[in-house]
Length: 596
Image (cartoon, rainbow, N blue to C red; front, side, top):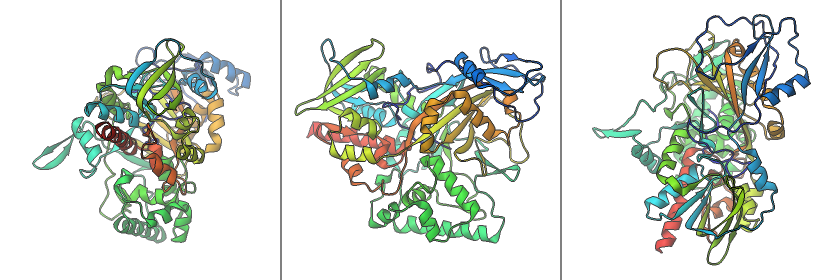
């Protein structure tokens, strides 16, 4: 579910980059939010205590109305807690701590607004400077070091590496701030499979791949709340012959496209053909209409898949992206075709923060956190990089033989001042999806509706636009005991909602999250003990019609003088596999030129 982009995301070249559960959390003042109760509340009935420091303060206010005045909301937001109205036995209000986490917004403002002054002191030198430490930047630097190019410096805006793959922790419980799983790669996907093998996720026994079950998503993997009960899987059941025929028709089209045209992850493994270009030129919904695929259940599912992987509805992405989602991996399997199990995935409580940590660890001191890069000037013999050292609060100059811009293309274009024509063109045309990730600390497992048991991925059929459900960040924990756990809710927002996401107080968005989950977990407000929210203004690249086949993107997959580019934006959409292999490609370019 959601935000499989494993890359840095704007505001700046990484929208927060703390990878792993022990990251320091930056947050605006925690706020107490008073949200209207959805139904009559009841008292806490002897629920097990959360870990030290996680217990919310409960303040019953007898006789007060649960209606929240705006001035109360603002005062609470400034205080660092959310006021949940009507959640105690007296119908009063209870303060739940939380706030925005994960992004140093003021550093992004520095990049956009500051006029950099000259750096004092001698310039620092490196053979290669990598700007940005998302998955692409880490993969590039790691590969350069493995190839013998040790003089590499990775400049990272945030205080830790990881981009939008980083993890978080609440009360000692790991949870993701963004990307949170990796589909199990096939052995033909050599770079990703080789990485998994190196990290001990898979080994060969008797000639076959055996994956470590500790890292595979535990059962139950996914479920859908459909017609007031939970069912296994995410595809709605075909309750009419019409729906079943539509499912079968779409499955045949996907298989035909896979067989005749070829699709792969990463995308460069499948040659780009005129057939792909024709798909890329039209919206996915137009292609579905042309093939008579209008069934409501099928269209809901396809729209959900597009929002989940691309951050945008089926009407906003290209037909290439819509078909690629299925044809590049597991196909489309309607009920009864013999493929009843979900595609296996690797996941961790902290999400892909685990992977980011593994990539960053061998780089050690080569990663320089707290460096906001302000300008990159490529000359004939070297590249001049001006950064701002956030800890020392002063400009810092770097000189490198080559620079890898492992940032979103819009940020890269700003850094080079629009001087690279294909970059300027690609950046101007790009579109990015805003995301919200809300990590909810509960005192115990939520009250369940009927049907399938609690799963890792939990989705509500027909949920409000952008509501993708939640993952159980504690699903991978091996302890059989109950107690506190974290649910990570994902919202893929429309681009028009970006200003509100960046300006509104966090309690407003917490209210939206809780409203979206009320139908399936009506006591969620009662059980909530903390809420840490992460906002991604530009979370992932949207593969809109024409984007994948862009000549400007193709040009950036080759060196531009002394500048190299490594980001999933170059693949037109953002997942770990694309980011990682773009980083490897940039490293290979530099190694080839170095050994020329």
